[in-house]
Image: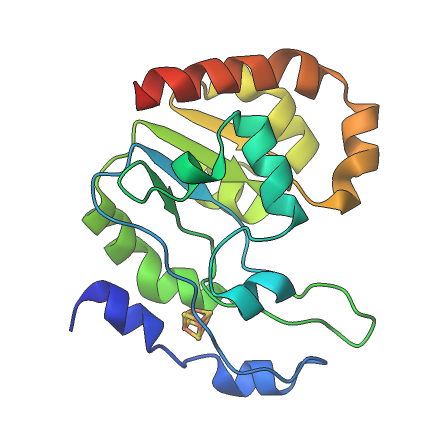
Length: 193
Ligand code: SF4
């Protein structure tokens, strides 16, 4: 079986998801082809993406495309952009309605094989703490890691999650939009050219 098909039929977390507040079944959202120029590493699909089966079909996706300066045509072109989160399935909500973390078993099971098949993308966007820990090995928090983006650019840009929950973070950290985003957009155009 091809790797993509193997992941799509993965049900390792079925028992784990059944005990969440959402009591959902696994639905891996897999979106990559070898040779993509940009690798987007997020946390895990949210509830809307669990429904659509396509990554970033939600307000977070709209904000991420705006940050990147690309439209949906480019964003969803798998020959240019691969989207490989730290877990392929929606992890569900806890009893308080908060997102559960990505199950670590997913990265342990699939990540090395996926990254090997993908090949080295010239540009990686590491979104959130889980992605940054894996791709940078950082032990500091997201704000400090993103603030130190120049240490990793131009091959990798650490980003906060583009969720509405981070709107206050964006207001508190105006350097992100003023300094990091213009450089990110420039780098994306250069990588796609
Ligand atoms: S999150 Fe990953 S390991 Fe768990 S069922 Fe989905 S694809 Fe499998």
